[in-house]
Length: 280
Ligand SMILES: N[C@@H](CCC(=O)N[C@@H](CSC=O)C(=O)NCC(=O)O)C(=O)O
Image 1 (cartoon, helix red, strand yellow):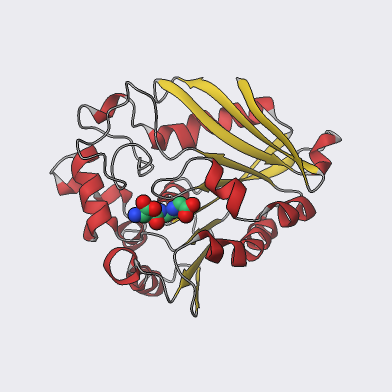
Image 2 (cartoon, helix red, strand yellow; image 1 turned 45 degrees about the vertical axis):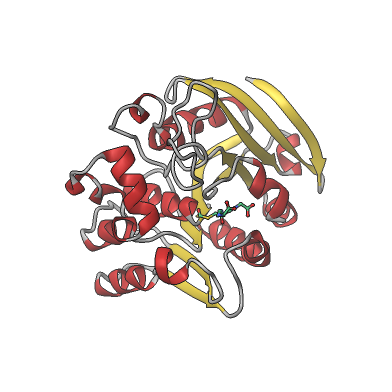
């Protein structure tokens, strides 16, 4: 692994690494925040943060304002990239913001030419934790959170891997990607036209079909002034599924907040405290 940035912050450390990924068959970059107690060798639990469309590992680390609370709670945060990248990595022909580079949707693509590198599900669930747990002073306690496309990733990866993540949270998540334009475009391109292959990547359907071993606690925060609310996010579908199946979903709507990192910065401390409760 190559260290590409190293910054002391609130007593802890923000670090960026580049490494060769076997899963995505290209170089990947991730960032990690290590709280100050990790410097003394104490192992700390990890929150995996999945960012949204157009993001890299840098958006969350630079804009969310999460370090003070994470340091006080003794939680490490890992922020991966949102897709494979590089000159040889296929993008969509229009180079649009919602498919291809910066828009991996946290699934394993099955359709050429994307299937060779766009294996973000396996990268986040398997390869990255192995790297983190073998190189840094962390425990195997993990939680998962994310924003928008990353909220979809946190919900679907968290529900499908309830043995791996003790709690799940999301800001402004895409909850029903099989029924919204962002999701339909991505799933068609990465998974093909057979819609039965899409169901495994839709948080509402996973909840409806009870495709989880343990019902891990979920916190979802949504701003009422989010310009993507009605067309793309539609959180009421998740609320309905959770209610119908008695799933422990804590849903909070916040008046006046939009889709931006200003919203995330306003409530990230609450999300970190939520996850800290479930780390034994
Ligand atoms: N057209 C916009 C849309 C991109 C955008 O809003 N991206 C969000 C995530 S949206 C869902 O996944 C984001 O987090 N942007 C980065 C940021 O730092 O705010 C555009 O191209 O910007």
